[in-house]
Length: 176
Image (tube, one colour):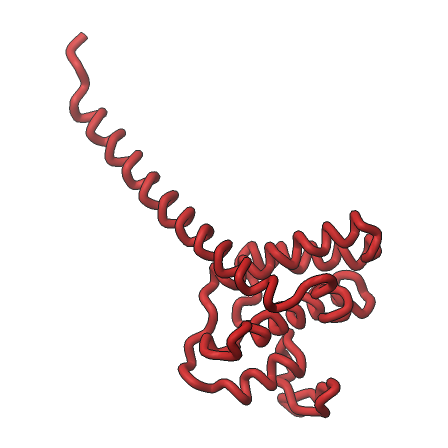
């Protein structure tokens, strides 16, 4: 049994790991941009999933995407937001200037997951990336991932501060 499957796109065919949720475009990015072995931060991947989720819901409301596909994309994005499937985002952080490789990686992973959920083919470009471009998605994902990172740090610090205040309060009870 082979550890690879063959994927095809407009540029030809190539081998992709058999268990990968990504497809040909991501594999091309892996092959072409092995620069640092650093991958995109989890907050960035989460931001991409939020963007793709919002686009699917919007395209459903506009009547451009059918309910089955939209729900499957929504579900796939939520799995990524919830912390699953990060190992399927192997694209090097140093890539093309517009971030097309990261955008396509997200489209392919989400399409693969959504196809399984819907039990029908969900296309990475035609369905997941509908109405979007890398030049729209990547700057938005950068800003959103920054907000996610800040919120995560503030929440952690606020929780720590709150616990310290409660501990001090219990040690320094005022006299009745």
